[in-house]
Length: 439
Image (cartoon, rainbow, N blue to C red; front, side, top):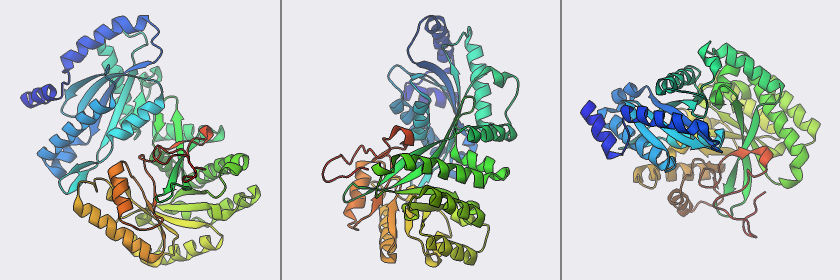
């Protein structure tokens, strides 16, 4: 195993653990004495449940995951960053960054599913980070702090965690996190981001998906699924949904003239969207702000895990639509029963899951599957949104299918950005011109 790891490190020009110790000692003696103008950090990056990848896909696939991750790390890190292999499933990184958002984007890039054969491998990462500009004298202390932060990130289902001295004295439980979530909501510290959805033919922004963001001083960037998990365990799902809706309504009340003709999509898991009391409260809020309810889309997520019967869902969705709200099924194609729901539910929009778009430029069978699904949705007369478009090849392949008025969403067109920044409708592909209306 040591020989294989040494060969791997040489192939990708990755330093060893001993190299890391030497480099950290040099950095600690130099960097703390100057004002760098940026954050210099050390991180331990761990592939979670690596043995599960070996068991499910085999050793060869696991090695491929490692090599692909190494290539992504090299691509994402700046030239003056340093990369080290600590053990079979851990890397060490010394790198500089300007903001926490850079770390979020870095992790998101690394976590893209890895294609392997006729399948793709999903995996999870955790990062424990240490600020190297603080007064630390020994590399052993850097590693100790990074390991503490890493363990907390894993236990709290966070993508990453910065070390702070509070972590030396206690470990945060879900109850601690929920208390912080309550405080954040009470003080409006949870923020909204938007990701635009474009008409593939015209480049016009048709709708914007609203996403919840929580940047905590100790926990770092809290995964939205963790927020929902905390809310679900503590009976807070309705309050989270109302918080998101209220923040959006306040934004639109102040800026609606800029977004006429654009719809806004709110995500609801099944326990939220079937909650009549919650939906009625949302409808009341829409009326109070005087914003046309037809501008809103309710995206139903995790539809395979509905706690009520299909018949009840059908009747409930029908009632929501009668109020003027559009309904979308999110992540279509990723579950086992979504086709059954499509056959029975009168929905307005179907969002094709990104897993069906990933690698269509290299996997013909996957492309044919996507084409068949798009043709099915087109025949059903629903609005189609293709999620997760990441590159020009995917864009061109979808466009060549020839179905009119397909909507597209993905990093190739625009990344999510804060509503406050008023740039969430800007696109890196569709340019502002007479042909392309962007909000």
